Amino acid sequence: MRRSTLALIALLSFSPAAGALVGSAEVVHGTGAGRHIVMIISTRGNLCTGTAIARDLVLTGGHCVAPAATYRVLLPDIKPPGLGIRSIVIHPRYNPKDYASGRVTADVALIKLEQPLPAGIVPAAVAPVTSVAPGDRFVIAGYGGTSPGSEAGNGVPRAAALIATGKPGTLQIRLVDPATRDQRSGLGACTGDSGGPAFVENNGTFAVIGIVSWSTGAASTAGCGGLTGVTPLALYRGWVAEQAKKMGTAIGP
Image (cartoon, rainbow, N blue to C red):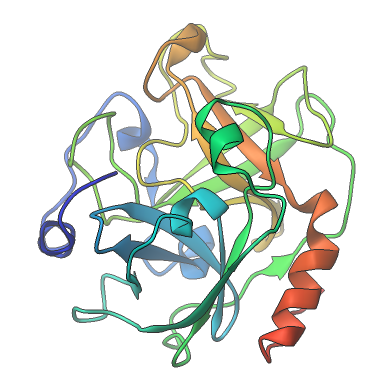
């Protein structure tokens, strides 16, 4: 979402408005999947979500940090201007033209912070490489809005359980609300949730298996509440581990 940085920061003090899309998702401030995510803002006025995978390392989408800008990591409990960033590395096969045209690309990036995240943020494990079958359950989480094109709900962490559609694959995973199945508006990623995680959950433990890259409205319309597109980490897990090591950070399994 493109807004001024000051406007994004100001929004954090307001309560979310209810909405028909992600507005009905569970608020997860300091709990569950919400313990692993951060906001990423830029001087271009963009808002994205990222996943802590170490105390000073955040995983996000390449499209979230590719434009030339100054980026900061922000949390509702951290006063502006937030946490400074030491370095950003984007997967070398990420292609912004492919992303803009809807083609599959390596939409993966890492952010090295200048200081550790606060104790309330817990690094998530990177899930082992695994196949995805139709109906598999995932949890997405993000700081995005509750309806497309609106500032309502920005800066409030939410999570929703979605399932894989009948066309999962190694290059991209498509998720849908099991209650609406893309036939009408339901739960799903929206503006500002980009770069956030798709988690597998096991007894309350979350491991990130992919990165939210895009969303649609119901029945392939513009907006949110239809499909949520996820870039799986299966093809990029080795790169993430290698780059983390080069950045001086070890990540868990």
